[in-house]
Length: 283
Image (cartoon, rainbow, N blue to C red; front, top):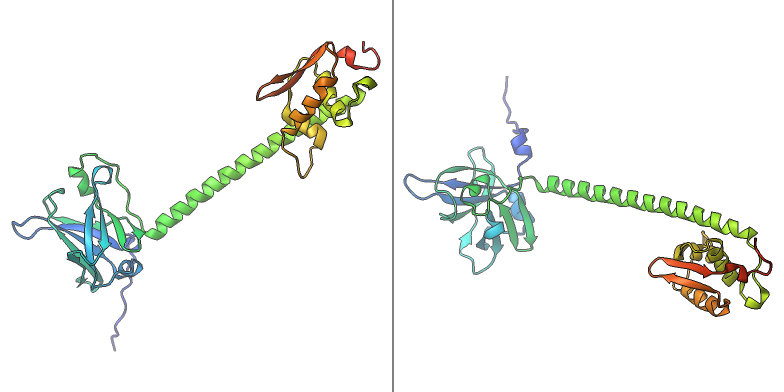
């Protein structure tokens, strides 16, 4: 028979969800409660800290009450001391001594949410007991490991991307419906009588005037006219202001009894006796 040393692997949910940073209040006899921040070696390494570093503590106020920042700075008076727990795990402890802003009682160290603010600063969300003296009663931020927080942010990003993709699909479908409607309008122009030759209209001008005339008195949008002139599937379209140019060229060619009215921000409509435009009298 024989025995050999084995490695104990932590599998409890508390261990698996440890963020690597914890905070607690330690009371010795009748002394004031001391605030202690514990950082596991992997967090210390990720932050680029060393045992020789000095730190300046910064306590959150107002909406940031209950949060603390530790900034690596040569002028700092705090040092992190390497400790070893009863079960053998090592950690770095920073003693912030008594803080009158918080409760004065012993509190077991619990996992805290943290974030790397910059190359020298770590921000820590202290446990719920800070709420007891928090004048703003800020909503707590649940502690979660950086990997979980990153996963949550990725999930939120993917949700936003999915919503954006859905919005684009709906816009494409709407444009398709509008394009189909404009095709119907354009096809209807095939039966429109010819305009008088003395109007001296170009092909594009005749098409534009034809749409306006076929919808006599009704609004015709800029998009409809752009599609009519340049096609639904055109790869490259000029600036839509080009329609204003066409309209300005058509207006001087119209008889006095006919006019094109601009509906600002919407489009145009034809007013007057449209029969005066055609080569043959329209019934």
